[in-house]
Length: 284
Image (cartoon, rainbow, N blue to C red):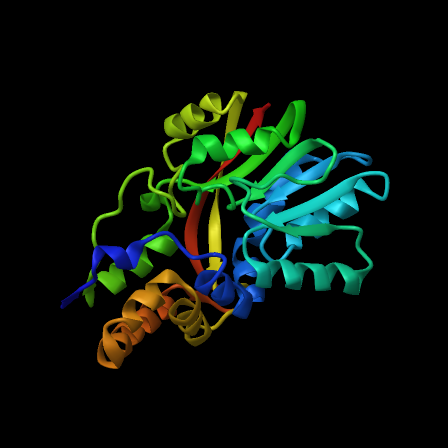
């Protein structure tokens, strides 16, 4: 077993490598988390005329859905730090005639030339701030007083077998330093007490939470075990770590991932593993 240096696990470079990886597998990423996004959109229940900011909009799927809900009298603006994803989202809006608009900027520091928003939405786009309290403070300045925020954030890794089982395989081949609690990353807000502290310090209140639990299709709906394996190795942080240890290590891990995904594959559905997220609502 070879050891991964701690710096290998630094926060994802969404404006660079990680954004490019997400773009390369956009349909698979979006398909994998679409059920959670749909649940958050249903919870948000947008109405015609509302102005909504979509934080960490990625390829724009949720922003497009919000634009349809709020109609021409409302506004849906997607905000993301990854220029390649904002470009793709803008292309998708143009291709479908959507009124959704997209801005490439760092939400932690950006000042938008926009009237204040009624609502803020984020499907897994809020957990990567290096300094979350100032970042949420900055976001609050973009909102009307009393504006509602709806966030989806991952719950504890142990409740997300899609991640735990995959990383269990990777750890059989390379050593990965223990996760740092509350560090920027997918599970930064697994602890709801910490999330509430962050939001309260940034001036938000009245947090309510509904858990989302279900099976998640690794690599998207109907992905074969081989497709799910290639997706993980080519698009996710685990694949990047394995690449750093050479082809022999990567190929051995690939065989074990394929075996894992074969065990969880269901015909007509894909590679199905348990997922849990928190659907969070709070007020400015």
